[in-house]
Image 1 (cartoon, rainbow, N blue to C red):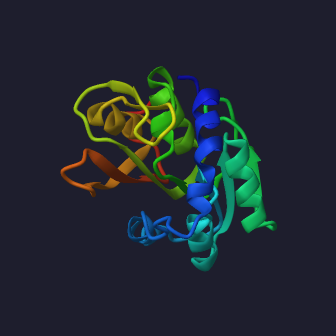
Image 2 (cartoon, rainbow, N blue to C red):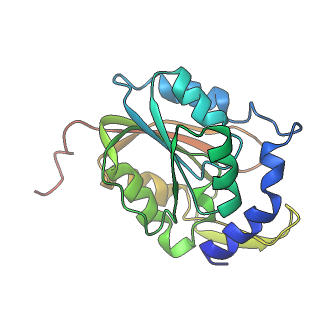
Length: 208
């Protein structure tokens, strides 16, 4: 599936994220852990923000100025209704380019929908969008090698992929980020939460 097709599927199920039965505490504890690594709280970005607004609200409460990004038209519509004063980007993270640096970026259960061939490129892009010392939290499929799958478990056609944990950790290193935390947070499901931080200085082995 292409990102546009994934977005169309999310358009159909977007009301679930805005409904009363949605688990709004999903991922909150992990974000609170990640925020502890941030020393200067400036701009923040929620990639694949959806329409629930729960991470946007946490970021505001924690002293950040948040922005959201999503390719789903309906998710962005719901997000803007919930937080009309927040900047939301209706865009594909594969092609979107940031004009600013962020002190915090979250990509919770979102970039695993990126086509497998683009996964590490997108991850490197997010690392490059961090300020020195900035923190990135994201989720991934906890497999040892690359894998992609298509199913309809959410009631609509859906696509997930992972480059595998070794490739993820190598990408973080090559992007001048260090992995601060890696957890299989929903075991026995292979759902991995990673927290990475941009280093102030380049790795000694990095070329100019």
